[in-house]
Structures are given as C-alpha cells and as structure tokens.
Length: 394
Image (tube, rainbow, N blue to C red; front, side):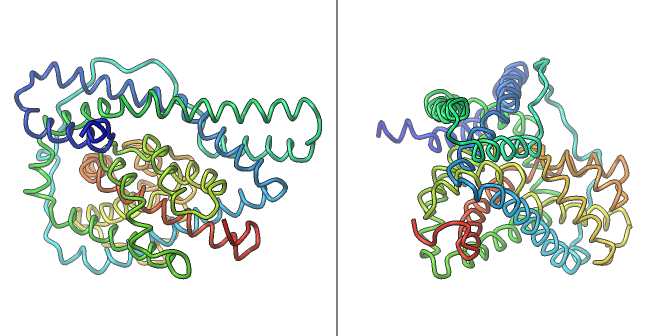
C-alpha cells in the first residue's frame, strides 16, 4: 500500500479526483494561487529544458560515435515525415466526416476566468532546433578530436551532468509533479470547461480522440511486426501515457517516457536520443487534434475545406514550425498559429476559439503524443537497423 501511495501516477489520479470533487468548494483565491504555482513550475521547466535535452542528445550522439551526424539528420527527417503523414491522415478523415457533424460553437460559450497572480520574469530556454544543432556540432567536434585531454574532460562533464539531471528528476522533480497537475485541474474545473465540452463540442471531441487512438494503435501494430508483441509494447508504455494525460506536457513527462521506452527498445542508447527530441517535435495527438479542430472551425465559419493540393502548404509549414516546439501544455498550438493564419486563413476570432478548444483536448492529446513517441522510437530503431546505422540486436 505504501508503494502505491508513493506512485506518481496514483498521486496524479488523486489530484484529478480532488479537483473534480472538491474544486468548486475552494475559494477562487486558492484556485488562482494553485494555478500560479503551476505556471511557476512550468516556467522553471521551460527555462532548464534546453540543458536537459542537450545533455541527453550529446551523450547519445557521442555513444553513437562517428555515425552521430547521420543519425541526427535521419531522425529529423523521420520526425518531419511522421508529422506529415499524421496531418494528411487527419485531413483525409476530417474532410469526409466533419461536414456531416452538426457543431455550433460561439465565443460567448467558451470563456476563461482564472488568471495567475503573477508570472516569473524569466525567458524560456533556447528553441529545440537550436539545442539539437548545438548538440550535433559539439558532438561531431568531440568525435573528430577524441583523444585530446580537453575533449575527454568536456565529454566527462556532460556525462556527469546527465547523471545529475537524472537524479534531480527522480528525487525532486517527480515528487512535486502532482502539485503542478493540481493547479491546472483546479483551473479547468473552475472554468467549467468539462460542462462546455459535453454539451457543445462532444462530436468533434469524440472524433479527435477516436482518430488519434486509432492512428497510434495502428503505429504500434506496424512496429510490432517482427519485433515484440503489440500488447507488451503498449503495456510497457501505459505508465508514461497516464502521466502524460495528467501533466498535459510531453516535456514534463519525458523522463517517464524515456524509462518506459527503454523497456521496449533493443537499443536504449538510441532511445535516449530519440525520446528527448521527439517529446518536443513529434506530437501525433496534437497533429491530429489541431488539424481536425481547424477544419471544424472552417466549416462552422462557412469556409469550405481546402483541397488536398491547397492543404500541402499547411503541412509543410506545420512540420517546420514543430521543429521549434516545446512539449508543454499549449505550446504545440502556439507555434502553429501563424501557419493557421497564413495557410488556412484563420481570423482573430477563429484563433481564440481554437486556443480554447485545444485546451479541452490537451490531456487526451498529450496521452496520444506520449504513446505515439514510444512507438516512434521503435520505428526509428527498426529503420536505423535496416540502414545499418545501428546493430540489429540489443
């Protein structure tokens, strides 16, 4: 029983239940305070996230030795390809189904009421693509100059940094994770977003969740061929998926995602490179949710769904924008808002609507993001094995 109480997923579940059952009884000032603490937590995560990503990627590339540059470019290419396939799949389903769903949404029905007391005056860390480039360049230099004392010292310091980050994540980060979740859940409960969801937006919500689930399940089926049983792969990843559902953040969930993925992978070193990068750039649930919701708002606004040829610039812009993304609540949408405006003709009102509606999907979207990244890491492993960039066995 004691181990269950110390379990992070169990603690997160308790926070969700507490917010749902007792959130309305709490003073509004307490809800604002909890939400403020949650934002403070995520601001700190964003500030230090580039260091974490750099350490994991650098050490993984050093371990890969001279094949590191090829691995990086191949990984980024596979991320863009996977995002593009998910976007096209969402477009195919949405263009057929959405016109037949009666959805009516107005700004008056979706309003926000909880604001934080303050935000930390700190700038978020470097963009993911800059961090990936820095890790790639420095690891390449270190591989070429290996044998020199200064290089060996630098590599050893980065390895110790990763070890320190791992200790911090397990000893300090995960224990306070439920407090972050509690603040956001109290906010959502106070704003009555669940009532709005069930009364007005259920058809599209069900479509988003159903399509995302089907897509991720298909991906696991594909990677399980000639590998391991699909049930075993999914079962090993479920703790990460549940944590992602609770945190609504792929970056926050990344340590759990990495731990679960290593149980499935034959090459843990490769997984340590793929998962930190994919947690920020590769979000299948968000790809599908944002696209289906955007197509819905076009239909609601009386704008016809674009043809597939007209949709291609959106896919290209979306994939490029995702390279600069951070896997925290809302960040995936923020980086693609310019793409929605430019390629789908979104108005200011439509931007406000999709921002609010996206929040309703965030727990489920993050669940599918995390589960999808677990399958994607195995897909990358199998692809690299066929290209002989890594060995075929663990």
